[in-house]
Length: 411
Image 1 (tube, rainbow, N blue to C red):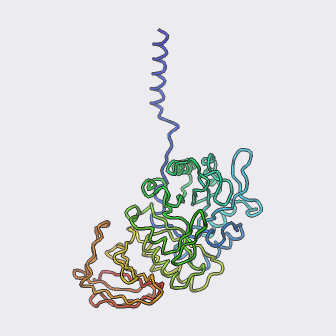
Image 2: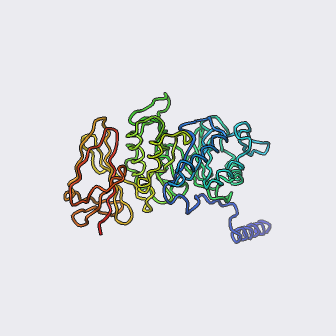
Image 3: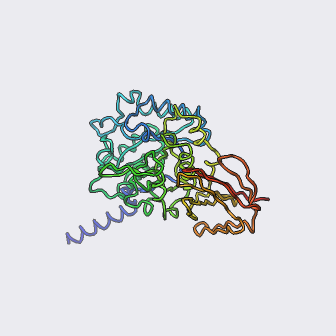
């Protein structure tokens, strides 16, 4: 009899629990409605690595405004690794008091006062890549702290993650950010190791597809146990991934190296290809001391418009011939972007016979057919119209450079 009564009591308790709902369920999804076009901003790592402090961040925010980058669409000021101090007795993280004596809340307030947003960095492991405290075991505390500070963007790295599942670890932080209640763009940075494009669409707003970039156009830097990749190597690693990208969920081929030592042509090519890829445009140079040439590349609004097109379709390589690749990207209002990328060091002649150029993009179900529709042709780097598709297009692409066109339907 006692067993029967005990069973009935347990059954009743289960019904009560069911009726109340599961209070322990987690929401492992990102905030909707953010990053509907690829995020644009700046990150400290490529130029400054661990040499970050609040003076640099404040001056960078000032430069983002004075340089015209904010007006061009750049919004995020992202502090990468090494901002961390220690955890207190309750486990809450604090910034390095020598580097950030005013605290992160005051810094966020300053950045916000400039019409910008502040991003921060952590790691799914016990330590960050730079040896600072990671978020493993502290995810919900860290997310609450970031919300209290006013953080708008989180880059979440993958060092020192022994025994962790990437999908599980990133879902845990997504749930923590959701629980904290402040909308945050969530940048998944596990270097493409566990193919995040297959599982991260509802977890993060962007995911790294490769290891780290460095400021070389076409080469590999071997660190022994890992490698850094040049711009062309990173570009090649994007093959087959375009179907996973779209508004609110982007393939991330890493931050840009424009202004960090490559030639002007190489910087132009870098910026053009990231725009064709619908990649996040995260600058990695010193905004306070950039040349007019670098500024002109980073703020070319016509090229940025290709990247920020609201359809969110990632471009694709159509042909490759004699070191020149032809890339296309369908855009809104029936427009197309076409980029000729010269991977050789020698100038190359390119020619498009429009009557022979009928291209169908199976992914977007869009067709470029100049026989049916005439287009106005505009050179986006020369910033001038160069005719229509009534006349074949002939040009020369300098070595390690691009010619980038916008095709707009003629009325």
